[in-house]
Amino acid sequence: MNQQWRSKSACQGLDPEIFYPLDDDESEEAKAICAVCSVREACLEHALGHREKDGVWGGATERDRRRMIRQRRRTA
Image (tube, rainbow, N blue to C red; front, top):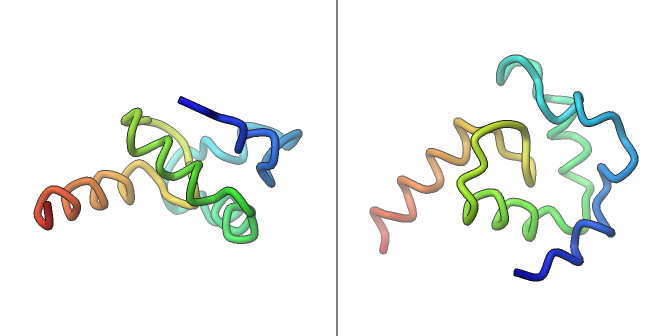
């Protein structure tokens, strides 16, 4: 799968710990960075497709992504 989007990500070069908060309540900083990222959708689709378990991807926490996957299954 093509992952050229990674080179355009707003998080590139930032401390990865920002994107791996201890709980969802601490994810606001990561989500704010994702909100202005030009490749947010590609990042989120990568996380959904690869079932990323940890971290904030495309502005979504693990809990958010699980919810999205359930919703997609219902509407498929």
